[in-house]
Image 1 (cartoon, rainbow, N blue to C red):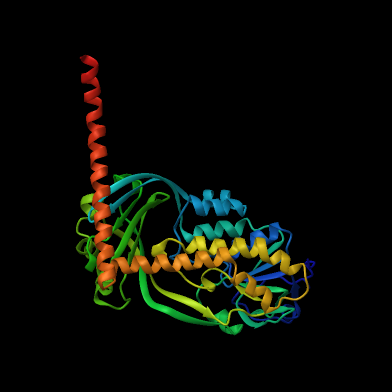
Image 2 (tube, rainbow, N blue to C red):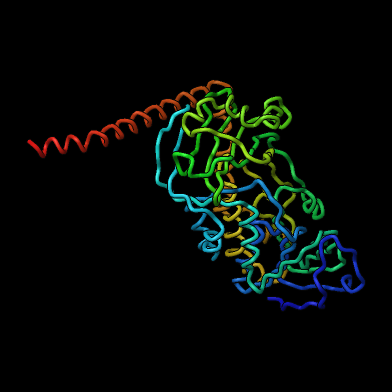
Length: 418
């Protein structure tokens, strides 16, 4: 691996003006990562723990609030554990042990299920705080990138330069870094969905459940589901709808979110109790995006920087961590052990069987869930009818089991007396 050779210079704030001293600074490393969000931080930690020198660059010294992943289950936590970050995630999250599932305005099942809820900003801040010594975090805006088969050179707005053999782009779906390295982003599906996040006035203890997933009541609601769950001492809600960002329903929701939610899901309060929204709305329109021309020497994309997924599917964080694990455990150590960083090396990662299968499944789930909610034609009508029939069977079985449990004790007492 390369030594951590640096011409010393203080790290400047991202908004500072270049100085002659900073302009002469060249930091040489093995891997440069642009983007210190979830995927970038986990990648930096994984590589550094393997003895690889990393410089991770981000424009924001303080992680900004962002409506992204806010809940994860045991399969994703197992990935964090394998990457050595499970305890960090647990410490930054609120544990959840049970969830209600409601369909067509009624509770279908009550499940015991371990999940963890968090604010994305808090989780990323925690991941930054535990970066190993071999991972240096620098703050600055990227002004230039020169990439090639042997060396990647990144220039920041303070004039400093970071050079490495490999450049990892973990900036999410934003196109600025992609353009600098000659990679195009295309919208496979615009306005695929919209995620709306908000907190509720009532605390978690005011609700009859620990968490709930409440699916849309009618086909023309254009609602996938609303999820309510605790983050610390507050109750969080994520509403996923298949709408366009400028349509009248969205305008009404922005103007009066509580009343619009009541009209859209009229049985929600019957199941959950009174719903009052507190504070501002976080609204994130979702376009499914893919990259073109990404098989380039010296540069590799991970997570949403490579392709996005719909948050309705709940696969976005898992997909990003699969990228990190496959890239940082299977490919980067082998790439650095041999000369060069040509496009053939990079292509091997994009063709990885585990990665490609998960990417395909994530997209298929996103499209299926959207089709079940708003799809037209015989295929989707039949699918919706089948889903409703399955839900009715589950509901009937659940009520029968509940009735049997209620009757079991007095029947047993009667049998003991006779």
